[in-house]
Length: 368
Image (cartoon, rainbow, N blue to C red):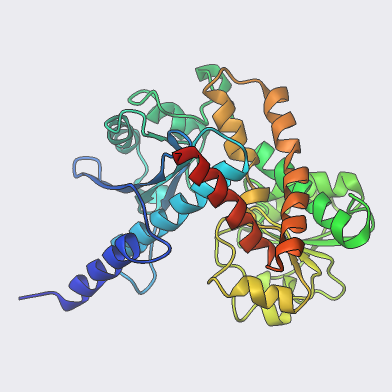
């Protein structure tokens, strides 16, 4: 008997991969190791500029779709985003991403990570992995035992350590550029900034903002994450959830720093901020959202541009990590963000479209 739901799901994935504007990927690998419970997807979008580089997401997919279908679609979207991110960051890397399916708190094990490392190694360097949501430096140390194309390792194991440090720094540079564009000064001093998600990246971003003199409001689904921020910065305000945060009166900047899809047809109409600049990947729920933001006069700093500090950090690891060198490159996110705003004004398009055009031109030149 045919599983109609399964067939429709497969058709949807194949259509995205081969026929949609969001597809065009070079390679998608489905990985399974029953002994360890590993189920994973590795998506390579482009190697036009060099080996694909992108992190490994470990996530339980529990939406209405089949978990496997949701994981494949997530990997495809994230890999494509990494191609654009790496191109805009000036790296000699294409884009790739991996997803391990399941709750990391329930199924993550040394055996599973080693099995995953063997799958990445089997690609012979076409894909270089790193940390992402649900994976950490210690996990990459385990993966690296089976795969030399692993970054985000601990300093003790020849790596750069926690890439969220420069991710947050890069977002802060993008936020400074947004302030320069809106208010004529590259500072958040005296501005009210809302940070949704104060975990791996968000709490570092709060540090930069407080040091710069911003008034910060935060929210997070994890109480311990909020508590950690408040212990260091008791002056930071807290609201119940993201729905409350986007409605905070007189908010100057909204920084989505959790999972993607934060900007959609529900949130954009009620957003009080004058600018959006955050660390989350794939913040735009669908391609029309950037136009909705522009029509409301909200300046959007493209996510894959401003959150590139982490990939800059792990890419540097492949050349013998030097933090000062990587930070200097991440500082250029300020200039890149301003370049995008200028291109958007010249072309008469939203910043997200301007960033895509620049990235696509760089990838096309790499293929030539």
